[in-house]
Image (cartoon, rainbow, N blue to C red; front, side):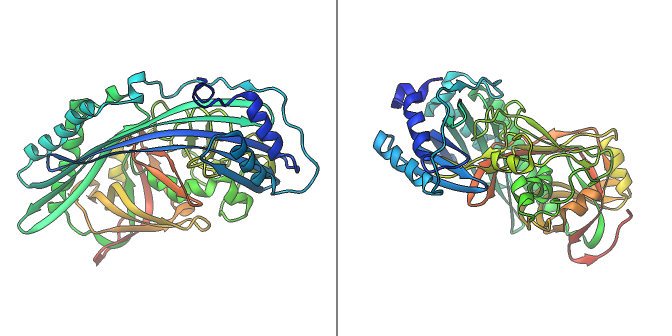
Amino acid sequence: MGYFENEFGINDNLCQMLLEKALSKGGDFADVYFEHTIENWLMLEDGKVNRSYGNILLGVGIRTVKGDQVGYGFIQELTKESMLSAAATAASLVNENSRPVASSYKSLKTPNYYPFNDSTIDIPLQSKLPVVKAINEKCFSLSNLIIKVNAGFHDSIKRILIYTSDGVKAEDILPRNFLFASTVAKKDGRTEQSWYNFGGRRDFSYYSVGMAEKLSEIVVARTVNLFDAIQPPAGEMPVVLGPGVTGILLHEAIGHGMEADFNRKKISTYSNMLGKKVAQPFVTIIDDGTNPQQLGSINVDDEGIPGKKTVMVENGILTSYLHDKISAKHYGVEPTGNGRRQSYEHYPQPRMRNTYMLGGKEAPEDVIKAAKNGIYIEDVSNGQVKIGEGDFAFYVSQGRMIEDGKLTAPIKDVNIMGNGPKMLENITMVANDLQLHEGGAGACGKGGQSVPVSFGLPTCLVKSMTVGGTRQKGGAS
């Protein structure tokens, strides 16, 4: 650590000066957030590198908070005069007597949930190329139906430094990387396509040629299977959510409603549900910043709060919202480490990290058997959610029919619709196969900001959801 002081001369005295300026007209607290991010992309199409580029982000954001109001200034130029100007912008939120700031700063010590080799900081192009090319070669070798392959690798290193007016100093270095592939197949005049990725906050050694071949096998199978896919019947029916990536439904349809700002503003349907039953007793939902190498993991949030594990729903009871400092003060609780921002150009909001449901006691095949007739969802995309009401619609990109308690034909051209809180109430079985999504490309949008997140789910049965298809038919519940 000490990167910002060594490279840019950022020290305790300078940051104390910035915080004093930010609170020179009053306020409850202030913080200073420095960021230096370097990211790179390598893109390959049909065996040839067609794009390779990078991006650098450097700057500081300064925040003054009064109640639930935020004054914010940011700037790219890390000179004393420019940063004081940004601090003055933040201070313009209020017009009261100045508020004192801490006279010394204690460096925050946290566990490291994403250790990596120093070589991950600057990965040479010649190290990435063999892995990306292996995807291209493997995909074409797996099926003569494949007519197009795109593959690529993204890596970034984000360094942050946070000073708070109450005397906290926190520094972190966050890797993010992912390997991705998409394929197009053609058969009897029809084309189908699919894509997949592996990643997270990983060391580069994770991305072997073997990993590239595993990714290729998955994406080719997902593409080719679509030629055998049918449209399921429409109507209300049981839906089984498969393990892993389907946790995005939990994130979108339920998790956002548990972010504390939506509840503080009485937008969320969960705003009066703390301590009340929201699911069956075997349902426990967690938002976690401490999962090793997961995309949503953080050693420290963007307000200087250590990464934590937060139990939102325990044995069916809503026990906690996800808090930043503002909402935590409003509710009289400790921050949960969910204050996150896209970059130094943005101020923090309560945001999810890795959101998942704990596994139950049932075998996955028993959950499918209990559904009798319905659909099994492996992956979804193109989701739309109304945060307040929790109403959602998702396109099922990968799934299968369930007939007489068994998985049968793959399905396509189908949407699922429902209400998040109602879906949570309707989960009647949970299997023992919790998986966290292994992707690294996921990002969540909120309030004009995008932050990396992940999610997970065990196989679980939702006794009734609306499935949009072409024929009307019910299913056993």
